Length: 401
Ligand code: PMP
Image (cartoon, rainbow, N blue to C red; front, side, top):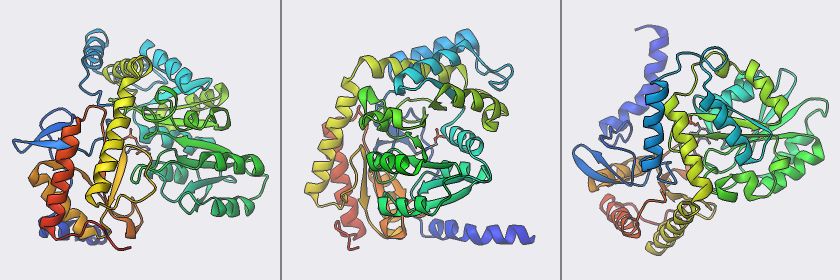
């Protein structure tokens, strides 16, 4: 075996040990659409692990829009936005998104991950700094690495630490604070008002990755900056279409000049094929629904509040930080997280296990996420199944830190 493979096989040992214990929870094939109930291994499984917060992946108008787009434009664009891959639909979506989040312009990429890689790798340079929250999404971390800028992390949502980091940086450099608006694993919201105050005081810029804030918080779901009334203070807003927007793709919004620059220098945009017609059309349809039917967001919040109350009443440790439809159920032991997830799957409940590096080692958890389309009765069943699985696995509901 080559030296390279030996090193990688050692890393794979972690995966193999979970498999040997029969508690491997990943790559579970689903044979139905992403909805509140899915088919796995011929069984109906309740889905509480989806990012489709508004539950629109099966909405008849969204599906119809995708079908019409395939009929008119075909299945793919066969090129990058830069060359032959720009459709009038991409432009329409960009205008709609800019208006939605309150920025001058927007640019769509083929995934959310690529949007972050594209923006961060090109907006700052070698002598600059990118400042990240330690729990930022992997795509912000990887985009920062590609920028060749100096990357500095501050402790999660810790403003004293952020200020200390800003103080230590030369004012002559560009300093870009790039953060998740809603943190994807524990459901807490970035302390944007304080971050804006610090950015103002030290002359730094701000980019918010709003993958989990769009469609969930802010005016008609316009996200974290809108939620705090701070849209003008955030330089760059990023979003993905793989969550509330029920599709695939992502975008960056900001001043016209920033977007014009990214159009020509963001390599994941220029050198990768554009979003497919069906994906674009479904985002436009979803945006229509978000802007005209506020009841979806209202139902999402009713479900979130109901689930949080039931989970707390049942005695689960849901912590104190989550303020969104992402509810962490702390287990604080990697093996137990996998065992409980596995049992839940057998009992017909899909949730996601979360272990380092996605969270701190003492915060391993089950990520329980709500959709607008869940019924109260599905939520009640899910909480019962959780209680049964914890009991069967011998895992106490309240974990000691
Ligand atoms: N940012 C955050 C905060 C995310 O949670 C994700 C997806 N999990 C992404 C970016 C990447 O988005 P996509 O899946 O659309 O590539």
